[in-house]
Length: 112
Image (cartoon, rainbow, N blue to C red; front, top):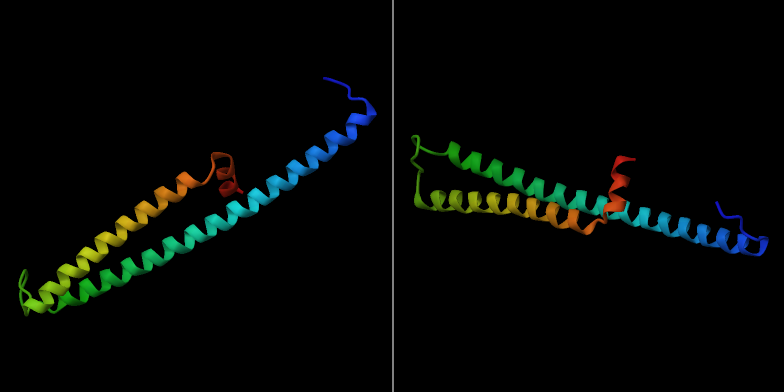
């Protein structure tokens, strides 16, 4: 351990205070980013739920298993299934993208 002269002690103290402030700002920013990511995921999950309900409603309008009343309903069902798949892919992409953006040293904040 090195003993610092009293003239250096003040400088070291100021540097450590600056580092603590930077860490707190980074911590605050990371929490905000996590909240934004969670909000985006929640919104996408809401879209997925809506698409799933619409698909279910359309499937209930079928006359017999595998048979849709008309071509318009069949086309809408296909479109909604495509949207649902796209929404699920968007959720996965968003999570992966955001995880890469959060620095490893800030991931500890999720555990707090």
